[in-house]
Image (tube, rainbow, N blue to C red):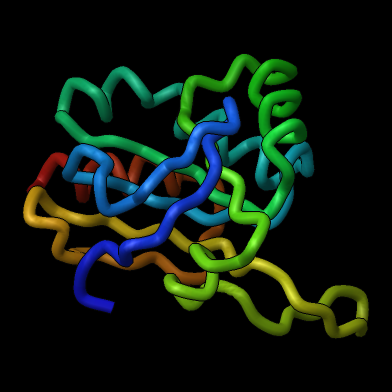
Length: 148
């Protein structure tokens, strides 16, 4: 993948979100599940920096396979300001290559890899963070976005 894939998810309000049409530069981060400790912290960290991303002219979108209704509850419960999108059909996670086998407590299952992608103004992929560790990640992404 060299550019933003032409895929569509559903926003937390249920409206279609075509990634290729979003303003750029753009950060798209993938997380496994709403309202779990790591995913909540990551969304809170991106939300805490949302004004800084906006000041730099950078959009941020968090994507998981949770339902639109669950996203709305997650957003409201934690006062999140970062945009969230639901990928119920898996087309977005597949296009970004973040859906695959994971292991937890010795069990193998399919799930979303925590990963972040940064696209420049021309929709070109300029940075990828795979197997993200949450502490400090949103700030590192902001630094990379500001350097564009």
